[in-house]
Image 1: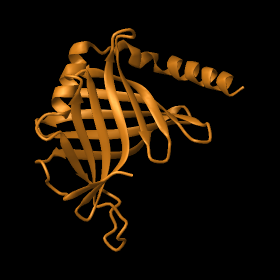
Image 2: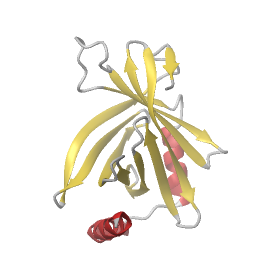
Image 3: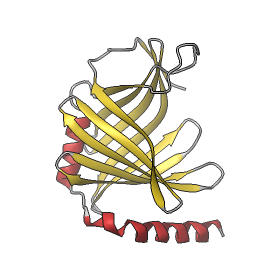
Length: 191
């Protein structure tokens, strides 16, 4: 039954997204994305808009740490939170150029066990979109989208959306700055 519900939901989402399907990705787009996100230190930081200095457990900033693997055939990401001068890993992700589907494919898992999987496509020279399914531990599936705008060589903006009641609702927006190696943290904690 769960598989049938997933299949139905996937079909509805796919039909709704046919307008987006006119945008395709290529191996060149994948390489452009890898080269941009992993250049320099590959570490991007954004202030946490929900930071509460009164709460010692509140993260002051968020981080995206990218690195090329397998000679650039895989882009790895660790999503970080910064508490004090320590960086903590909250999830890991990877992007690949899939030669069979001819798409940039994405998979992420967080500490809580939520799994996201989807694809990336470019809709302009400086704008790429990550569209994915979020699989919750209780079996629920939601649809999400992240729009990434390359502003400069060392800045980009991400706006995240969730598909809710037949419409895309904004979840949040962050502007990321490329940091120098070691900037903003002294230790890394993996859990």
